Image (cartoon, rainbow, N blue to C red; front, side, top):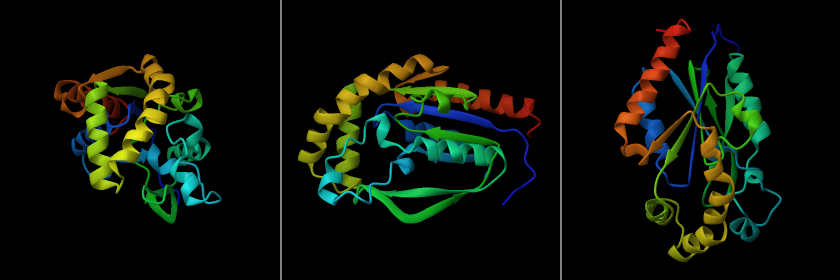
Length: 214
């Protein structure tokens, strides 16, 4: 459905796994009135692996840029920029695949693209007005990942450990950490850095005002 829509801001938020990106996003969203921010989380755009058996999906490298359907994500950003609602995929961390469900995302003045590879693809970066990198120490990220995956995603400690050493850590070094150079703002200590997050919120508010948004 098309709506009367004015130019919006696209904000990319990258950073390592369990660096605090979700907390940063939540604090930004909470700082604005409802319906001001549309969130496109990159986890929802993992490639469709329906043709792959579950056991193979368990060992798939989900931390490589090729694991994401960036073309679909870009298409959805362009649709929102035109004032169209989009059907964002719903991903299951238990089945390691997309479900058949979708989440309808309505256009909003601010669009946030959040994920470990949010700043990797130069085509996607070219759509962003503001680029952030959430930075946290490796040991903190590992502990957070263990807690998240074991308690909330039904993974075993052994599987989390093996995945970290086999793909998460090497892919972070090869692909995620280098994208820090593209960030306009680096947020150390993740979601606990209220000073940096407040600066980002102020910048977004100022740009909305400049674009004619109240």
